[in-house]
Amino acid sequence: MSASFTASKTQLKPDARFHSVLASKFINCIMYDGKKSVAVKVFYDAMDFIATKITDVEPIEVFNGAVENVKPTIEVRSRRVGGANYQVPTHVGSKRQQALAIRWILEACRAKKGRPMHLRLAEEFMAAYKREGTAVTQRENVHRMADANKAFAHFAW
Image (cartoon, rainbow, N blue to C red; front, side):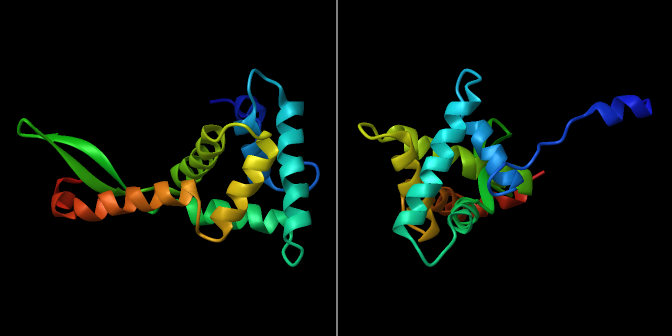
């Protein structure tokens, strides 16, 4: 592999306001149809709403805390052994933890209808920061499922 090829790989740049790579990644996940300006506006409007509601903590800290509280540490994966399918608990890598947390927060926001996206997003961030809300419930369900199937942990590969 040539040096020019490895140098051409682009890394994700931090966002403009908070200088956070995680925020930049989250904005990219919000984006539909390549409309990044809309996704940026939704994210920053949500951060502004959080700043008006919670004055003692910075909005980016609420965002980071929310993502941390939604990250799963263990999940179940289907494994076929001897003609039967088992739900085998496995540990989750850091990149997958982050991806699942972002996905679950966005799914929770998109499932609620009738309000602007930035308000739904801000409320989900604040709820997840307090270890409440739909995304945290999903994480707890995944952990509960893994705990219920720990008898099959010896099938992990």
